Length: 294
Image (tube, rainbow, N blue to C red; front, top):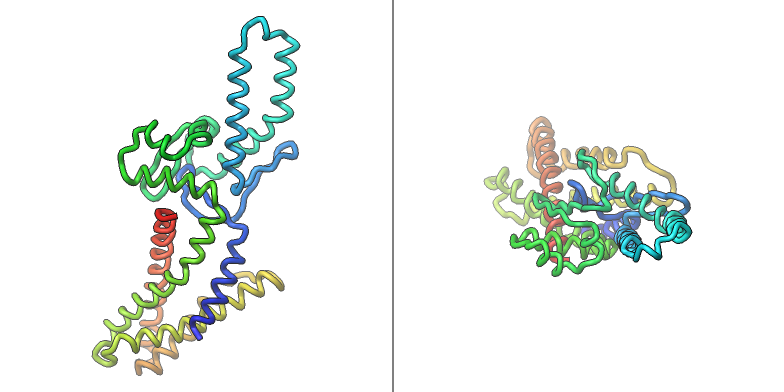
C-alpha cells in the first residue's frame, strides 16, 4: 500500500514542480517557482535565462564590432541607425535579463549582472564573466579561470549543464525523492529501535510501523495536493498534513509500544521534530547529489 501511495504522491509532486525553475546565482542554490520580467513585449524567465544571456552577449559583441569600425564609416547617420537598431532589438532583452538576474541575487553590492555572474552552490562560489558564461563551454571556462579545486570544477561544469536543461535537472531531482523518503524512514526507524529495543528488539518491527504511519500521511498529502491543483486552493496545506500526522502518530505509539498518553505525546513531538530536521537535511543532500551527477 505504501508504494502505491508513493507512486501517486510522486506523480502529484511532479505536477507541482512542472513550472519550477533553478537558481544558482548570487548566493542562491534553490528550486523555486518560475519568475519572469517583461520589457517592451520581451519576456525573460528563469527557464530561458541561458538563451537570453546568449542573446545579450551577441548584442554586446555587435556593439564592440560597431565601435571598432574605421572612422570613415562612423558617420552620424550610420551611428544613429545602429543606435536605433540596438534600442529596438537588443535593449529590451538586456533590460529584462538584467532585472531578472538582480531579482535572483542576494548580493547587496550593486553591479551589472551582464558584466559578471557568481555561481553559488553550497559553500563554493565562482565568479565568471557573463560573456564567458554564455559563450564558452565548461571545460574552456575551467582552463581560462584556472579552476584547480574539484568543487569549483563541479560547480562550473554541472551549474552550466543544469541551467541549460533546467527541466531535466528538476525531473531527476523529483524522481529521486522516493529514495530520499525511504532513507528518512529507515533512519527514523533506527531512532525508534534505540528507544524501544528492549521492548521490540527487531528493527524491522519499527520500520513496518513507520511505513504504515507514513502511508497515511503521504496519502493525505497527495489528496490535499490534488485538491489544491485541480479543485480549489487550500491555505495551510502543510499545517493540515502535519496536524494529521501528529494526531495519527500519537495513538499509534500508544497502541503499538504501550506508552502512556503523556509519554506518547512527548515522544511524538520529539519524533516529528527530529524527522522534520532529517527530511530537510536529506532533501538538501539529495539536491546536491543530483546536481553533482546530473
